[in-house]
Length: 283
Length: 290
Image 1 (cartoon, rainbow over the protein chains, first blue to last red):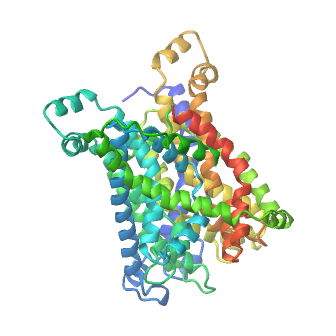
Image 2: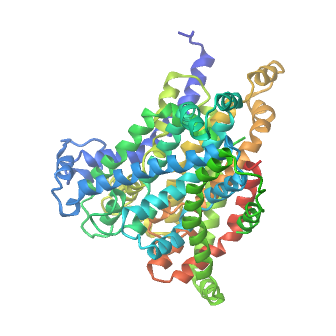
């Protein structure tokens, strides 16, 4: 315990003067969401900071699909999950192969592919969405989960390749040389030397792609339209079109949908923060 | 998209026909999946998009549309005011999170939440707070003044302001984290030397922190501008581009034309954004592809 001095107290107060507004600013929309989810319909509009009778009834309605807006809730949740997992897996596959070829095998033209990927990373996603939508129509993929999965792999893999390449470049080349002297083929090198060493970066990149796909709204809303094919965020967006939106159910569904990414983020925080911040901007 | 053309010319250089070693064979095979993704979902859509945007008439029509002109203006406000405000606050907050206290460590865990959770529930939550009849803000205004509060999102200026605030709310944690890691990389010795010389905290920032952080800060600002140009959610989910289509930015305008079945206009709107995007991308490519 540090000794309390006048200057110390003043310094602490100054920090609190920043910390408290930061806390309120951060939590306001999230708390509002939570408040709605645990309030009975009428109480939600009262402007109280805590409901007089907090209830889990909204969750019950959503989980039992007891409202005509929510008859496909579980299906849509499953769609979100399928798209996220498929995107994570495919991105990992594509990006790990590419990063290994570029960084370890030093394949000819690898640098060019790297630059093209980097260039794709810088195309604002909303700008690619319009031509992507038309292209998926031409490929006959519209309204299929594959359209969204492939679009998300396209968006996620440039960054994934880049982060993985940065990480691969740091592995010592002596390992490869030793393995090659022992007669390892490039494929054995990949399985037995490369993948085990890259595990932390692979976790970070896989989680990144998974969360990107889970959280995506724009592409999902353009590429999918049937009630049984859409992901949960599109269903939430569709709430807005109605005049009599059940707001408390919208907020509850939103909260349920927001929980997994938050949980995953905290579970993998160690990998996420170091992997992503190191990769995002090379200083 | 000149950069693509130039780099592709590179790739097409005649391969040296000096035997295919297993390394080269496998290297090529492993690159194929990404190259396929790139060809089918980047090259083809981009070329097709340019082809859709080829009619000069589209641009005439576009510049005659007051909504387009307004959305260019909104986009610039977003970039110049929104991004710079966000980066400045992130720079200052990164200094705050540098303090080693248990409660600040807890706060930093909470602070990251907006970035970790998806946009749609939180933006809809803000949208509902601003609802003129049932929103919590106007409920409180009514309770204390017995008068109805304003219809917040019915005013284009307020609508745009709140969209920018939502954008900042969402992306501030990420940039604060990046700038914090930049600050942590600065050698402690520099600060010790500075405080021995009697430098005040403002002087320490000016002569130690800022010079070490300048490059990172500029790079982050440019990258943030590119991403902000592609931010569809902050505007679309909060105001839907309204009222009277006055809060559109280029990212939502393209989708608006698409929904109106004016695909040519939609692509043309995106093409007109290129003079804004390409210099930023060029800057980032120079920075990162060394």
